[in-house]
Image (tube, rainbow, N blue to C red; front, side, top):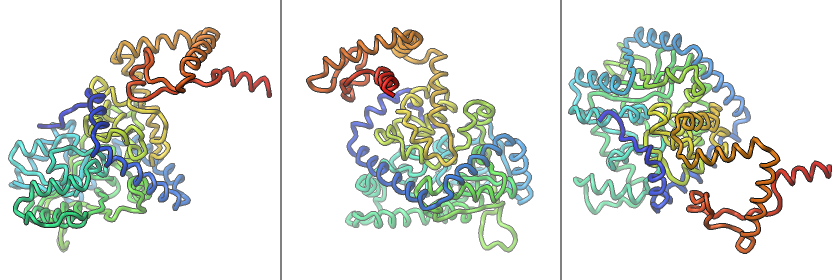
Length: 476
């Protein structure tokens, strides 16, 4: 296959199943507790954090305005360093380029660092279908590869999996090991994965990584990891392939260092990731290690169509995951419910852009619009605003359900007639307040079953907001 099966049109069913899964709900509680506290502490410990966010935003905004020039400069520098740049318009083109490189290298096995772009194009399935075995080397990616799953988070791909499930999976797959071995501690699970992957690193003919940044000034690719697997994927095989989307370009090393200061703090609450690795071209004479060949596959896959539109701001995203770490919807349903590669608020914007609002239109509606995602985004991407743009597109194309369209038209009728609106809300508030006086809430309401099916609706108390506001104005 060339891409993940898209289940975004089944978002409501996916979300319902996720909320009924006790193991998932247990795992998602860890996301809510851990990531939020760590990010807040890391930001508080750096007085210039907000100024760095502004600087990071401005760097990316500038780059996108001159993206063609920086891409050309990057290609020149990679070529000068002895590397090769390949341009891919879409997923099929990117997959074929990577397969061609693997075949020319005679590769039967490739090791892979964590790469959301490879997930986007369905690279693993494509390689397997063509006789090349991909081995994920990031621990989280290795776990979900064994489980036959996609990542549920862009920086913690196995965040939905509990320790007991990992142990069961290792016992199922690693049958050549002692069945009586103790896997009760996380450290024993880690040691077993490390032992299994060691031979894979040594045997691989090609190593594939993503890129957090591509530096136009030097032709350098940059990855950040906490496990060191990315380094082994780059330096041990004879061929290193970097696969990245166009917007990963950053003008200079100084610019990248600025953004790095907000990346790890926003993602995991660290000052810096454990490993920040810069790679420029293949091994040079005198280098102790490194690949003989260095290839970069630059993927468009819809990015250039976003330039100059209301969705251009989304191209500033540095894939830190802060938006989903703080999203109450993501906390409730996890990443797989979103039905494609990118979950959470960033996925709610990016997915309809890449696969079409016809398939991804449910996602921008899966938001409370609380604004937490925008408030923590290191690149200050206005995610709620972009989700509203997709809701508008969905409405314009008559993709919203008839009941929703009817409800909006009814609301618009009253909202454009202020006196009638005030009268109607007074009557509705009074009636609902009287009917709900006994219990203080409603477990079912006509025309609101979509809400009351999953939660109670509090009974109104007192007068309307507008009435209270008018009263206080008069009193002042």
